[in-house]
Image: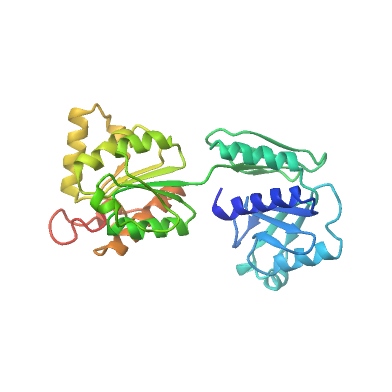
Length: 335
């Protein structure tokens, strides 16, 4: 789940605990261009207070009006469709004639919300199923590869714990990368055992640890929603975290350095630490997309862009072709 949906869940649980009436709205399906993807949440309280978003536009206003007028007062889940015609799409602020199909739960089950929150607190993937005919909501364990499914009668959504990023090194690039990653809803941990660097780390909202990088990653319990980026330029630190990260379920592992230095790193790992070709192929090094970045904020942008592409399963053609040369001023820019 991203930060917005986690906030929706927190608000829904809080309102349930206060005895407030509220509805939970989920984007079930979209056609054309839609502002929010299937699975996005919105919680709407009886007084019109909203947490989350399903469109970022007039649809929220219409839902608020329906709630205040008592048109969301039934107990059984039901569907709403917005943007069927081009005129209606424009009226509700949907671009390019987009259409949204929503599943509305007028009286969400508090026990199901607590069950979902408990699984997320244990960093488990969860499936949430809504049966419109019976109104029953169930929360069970999800498997990797499960996806949102909507057949018009049952909606199944996949919910996972917050995405995490471990940055090794507290230098300038790490400072920009941490802030950008937080804007993308990552929980950021910075590992910096070097006292002279750790002392100056002051990025709000991040967690600073001074343990050794391999121990830090092991203690975090890397999973498929965890990314690791090594930025110290010191193989005694960067290689230590790579030894654990490349054999972990982490979805992204990157290391700074020129193409030449990263080639040497791969040779070192293969010769001395029993890494397979498949495991070494997981290493993004030089780290980040080859966009000609030179400054710390530019390099951080390159890293965040590649991180996002991998997270979303997007292959960007020509990465290798566009990579900076092994010599010259760009050799260490995006990595």
